[in-house]
Length: 343
Image (cartoon, rainbow, N blue to C red; front, side, top):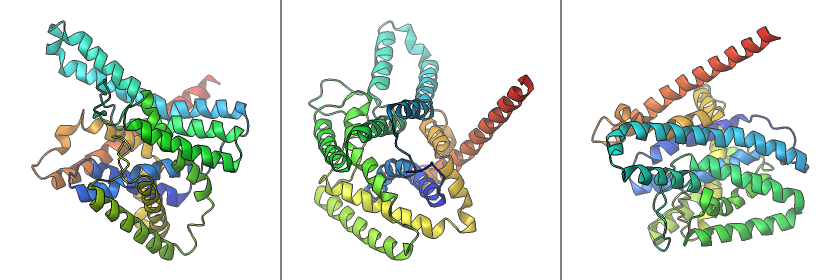
């Protein structure tokens, strides 16, 4: 609960999982996608809170909320506006139709209001929910972490655990019938992953990592195949699919633990440095990946084989990630020099 610090194995876990996200969004094979999706988003939610220090008072909560808003929500708004301009330019011919204009604006308004990662809303829900896409994660992380941080100020340990479970059940239940603005039903559903992170940080993952990796892997893979073959489905937070809940959550926890122990085993290898670097700046890769299917699809969709396209997508996203990082570094250095000159 002390000062936030960078932990090498966490950066490695985020880096390798970010690559798995890209693979899972490109490969259509249900088994491969299912194994990745069974834990990849829960891992990001959990590890984003492992080194997070919860607020001690309302003043600190306000400051942290403001900082998280700048770090998580501003990129979402930026990505949304970039895609909006792109769609405006590519659909410019459609603007000759007066009926297209209000329909287009209405669609974009619903997109930013619902902040949904998936377009397929429940059949019983009268509103067609457009997909915001990958940035939904940032919105849900911001809302869920702020909510848990607030509850943390008012509830003791036992009550916080009980409330987290109740909120999760409510979020899963609501998501079957209606999708709330800002994906708030998912916000409620993922609260246990953030709560578990409070205690996951107490697990000494560096002690006997190989043994714990094997144990966590076996439990995760057994749970995954039980759900996969009994329900022909797997955990997917964006489209609100929670097969055999809460068993799929238990599987997600052990999947996260498994990859965490694997990261401890591999992060100190010399060849791991690029993965650690990617994990450290995973937000930049998330931004690139959020735009690659809209702005850069022609760069990586080059073959009928989705496996070839997957390799190209990993390559293109990595190059663009490095370019974005260099541009941001250059901007920061320029801004710092300008401030020093002014002083």
